[in-house]
Length: 315
Image (cartoon, rainbow, N blue to C red; front, side, top):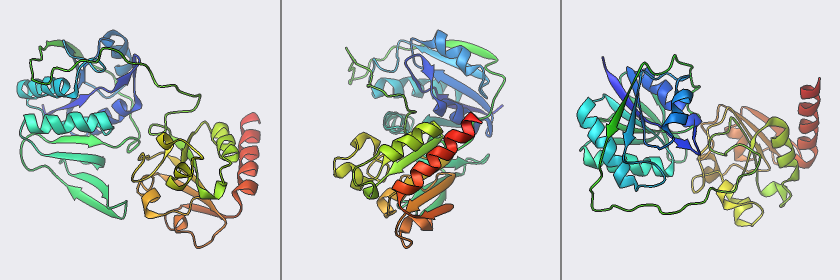
């Protein structure tokens, strides 16, 4: 039976949505083996039972948050050598891509990053050059190491792991760095931008007033994003910038309010499933990628949309 390794992505004792998406892609290829590098394994295992995973492996001796990415890649390399999987799938976060790159070097394999689709023959689909070009590619040497962009697939429900094993591992590499302290990021009540199913973003057209954008986002249970123009102007945090030099999102619904749609911004949101654009300029480039467009003032359109959503939810 062909097996595929996925690296479980977790935070504060909770498995992220990215892990379920990795399992979904992996199930297209064969038996999915989930690798857990966390002292919270006892908390994570019940959560993994609802995913398309056939087996779990808990690495003892190395864990996220306390060891360097070099240690994590070394542990994965040891499991690859033991199990000879058809591929290794990792979430396409900054940390995930660093682990993937180190792993590819360790096992002398090719690597593909920011993949948005993957077929049963391990042919990957990537959106490149700012989203203007779609590329189909495959690793031709070694065990493919592939990072999957978040929200690229609808996660399926599985029957959960059928078996489990512990994998003792001692890391003795030269970069034996350890994290001695850490503090969780301060989070608001909205979903994480890169994992949200719905994102409402504001741009230069807000003139710095994001209140209508935030109101619609809260009505929809969405995350809030911003264009580079808005973050450069100091209107919104750079950590919430969507674009080529910011974060890449692929939600089910993306609402762009007052955003012209420069290639820099489109590169970060063009793979969204449904795009709604609101702009006073009918010639704005954002309308070229939008599924639905509203030519109008966002300060008039967004409050009406928010009222409509709120009324629908209360009816």
